[in-house]
Image (cartoon, rainbow, N blue to C red; front, side, top):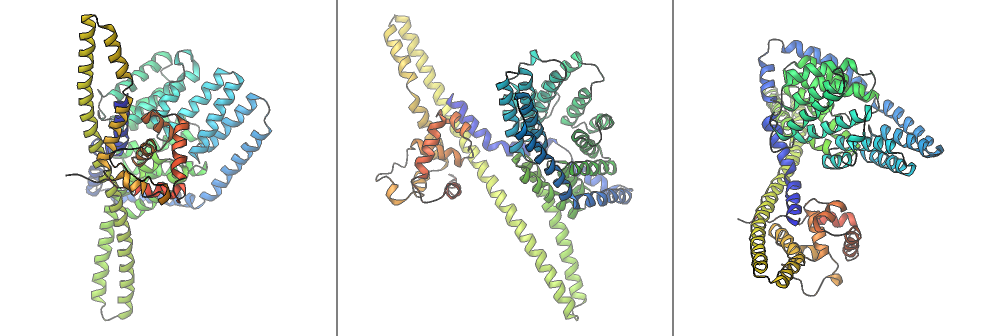
Length: 554
């Protein structure tokens, strides 16, 4: 059990690197698309058509505050409705309405209302309402990138008891979970991959139980082909979905974006830009800040060489992701940042060269020379700031990679040692049973059951191999009168283990409970003990905890 927990720690640390490898290695061929566009005879016409779409979109973006205000009014009305609701059913409907409204603007609040609606359904003893709320919770967790939690949530539903729309929605969400997991799977995006097989299995169930004209069947085929990078096929299904959606709905805006992204993969850049721009317009009109199509539009701008537009749209996408509260969306946007940064670097470099040439030609004009100098200075400062940001991100990624290697090395070593101990244990028990010494066999088994301390020693060994000076630096955050007289540098106290895992990125209480086999009250108690021993605020303490850096050993 402890081996599984340690493996979970390692997996969490290397997740982002795995996602990057999958995306860059087997995803959309941005470089190939860019080269094809550059060689195209129609590139000027493509840009002209694209610019018309972007001009219209930019006008809608300028009115974002107006549409957001309309959305806020809807939310305020929903809150009033909830306050006036009487009875379980009326409260449930009001809570679900707020969950839907917030699903476009704030992940945490939307999830809170989904959970509240589920609790209300349980109070009413209505299983159907509880299923409806759980499905909404699952859909939101998928949108927020919490795929394991989404799988756990939908796992509480007995699919065999569902029928009609509820069953169809259940299958759809199961399919979406496998679709999203496929992007981070180490098995790759292949037809024989584990997630590909599960997606096709779910599709076959839906095809068997529902008519061939069912909307979700086409949607699943689109996502399945996109998953396998069959963009022409995916685009064909995506274009079939758009006219089936109700205009002005979230699904309509979402499928417009899917049509645009699949068309981009298929090489139809002009239509891709048109559908993406339309999708963004629809999302803004809905008052949404959760529309990944803006990130995809930034990628398209980068492909066709319009890097300033790419940078602008990526900034909007990042702002929306942070405001929505989804680190998964933040990660998705940041994936393309290095490419946009490199392209912007080349653009700024070309501008720099042009300015130098102009300054040389107009050397006799002092005023012109000064203007050129100011512009160049500003561009260089901007480039320097971005380089510092990229350097900081690269340093964090390198540290995460080193920690991942160290964790897995220790896990593998400890797993080997555990197998050896298990073999010796079974050998000893077998020998006692063979000679009829049952009491001795029982003693050996009881001794093994009480060996939990060794598991914590193993965790200590892993942590201290990554952060050899963790104990000294951790106590350095305490007040002088709260530090122990004798510090054992090779041993972690229970509260140290809690904060050591937080330093590794395992910050939620549920994950800490699972990793250390502590209760929730125990976790909270240890946190309280530590916070009372320092002069820092909780936020300041966590920030200083991050300063305990990994010490790489040769």
